Length: 224
Image: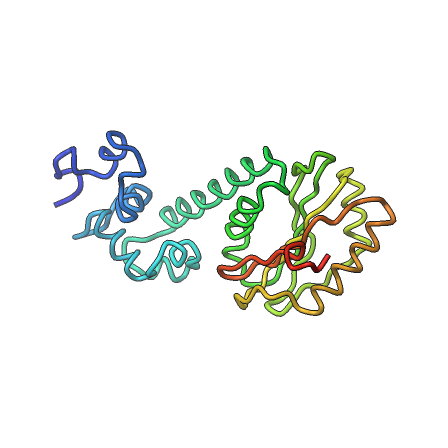
């Protein structure tokens, strides 16, 4: 039996319209994204098997294309829909964060950074450029590296701050290993960046290290 043969009130899409998205299970929501099943399986069955195989939503969204497509019935279109959905969620989180004074919304900042760095398998150093009201003007990835680290050039950071006319900045980088504890190298480069930005009167408000699932703040650790 396909989903089209089910009573209307039991179909995920119709249930979403009638009850709202929050009333649906993860399997039902995923089935709506998948849209169709494959030979012998409904979209709901396919979604259930996929979630069972990946064990969590995080595992599902972190899934590489080759792994995702190894299951029958899961092709490029379905993978693209899931990746697009995740990116829209990230952008919505950034839109919300941009409307807030960043220093008063540390939990929102952490949630955004977790989503931002979720799929990276290598280290990426990013910068949030802020105006005088400490609202985000722009978020940019400035340096990329390997799983072990990324080389950061203070001169380039100063250039980007001047380009965006930033009054303050927040740095962030990920530790692909999962451990969010700042290293001595992290502390040293942050101090170099502070010294460089002091010359152009740009304040460093914080530096977040993003692990899995912890996000560590330099400001909260007294490292700034």
